[in-house]
Image 1 (spheres, protein in one colour):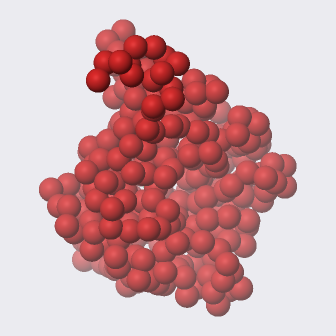
Image 2 (tube, protein in one colour):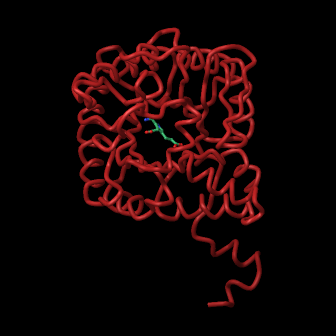
Image 3 (cartoon, helix red, strand yellow):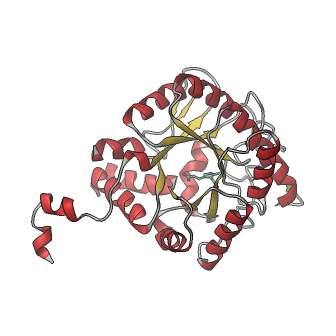
Length: 316
Ligand code: PBG
């Protein structure tokens, strides 16, 4: 076996998995204000960006050839009914309009969820201490339509309510967006690895946790069922999240389904690698390439990753 490992020129030729900037989607956090570029403590090199700064960031991302961005919003104020999520002048809607105008070729995905917009930090309408599924669907559908109106290219629901893909598909169709694709966070686990994101998006639940709607990390067959349901409801692409602790799920999803498959290397995955590197315990650049390669090798077509920029520099 060692004959083919003897030199980089040979290794290159027999390499089975390759990374390309096309495969990367960079998550961005948009906040109110102007000229705001506030670094997120637990995610060095990632920022809460006001719309003008998000435009700049997106111009850089497009110049690097990165596949696209996904927007998360931090609204001016939060309330019980997540009213900032579907607001026509909400932060994400403003960012969509500005970036579409200034950086027209860049693929813009939007995360559709309520947790960044509710005062209690849960992903939907709370009734008797738990998130009410069907009441939340109307919120999600309204948010999806407002994102489509503002210029989103792909709608990505991450809330894990049952029936959200069907509700969003129907709402988009009747609002005149029958061609707007849905990327469903189909198998999304109740993961501790979202910790740093909740600082970034200021979305930690104020009581309880998300285990009544996100998946139990112990379950694999259930992931297949979640994905089947989302496809039946009209999802155009599906996603597994987080990525590295769930490579087996990515592989099973790849083997079961022919739809484009995404994986989200989440905030905690980013922060663990970053923290170890900052301590001098691990080589950052090699960890970036190896971790992303493992996610592609497991079967993901594209990866949402906070390393999108550095990874692109490393492979080009
Ligand atoms: C919104 C959402 C979350 C993430 C993406 N969309 C947080 C959560 O579900 O608590 C996490 C992303 C990351 O950790 O990088 N529901």
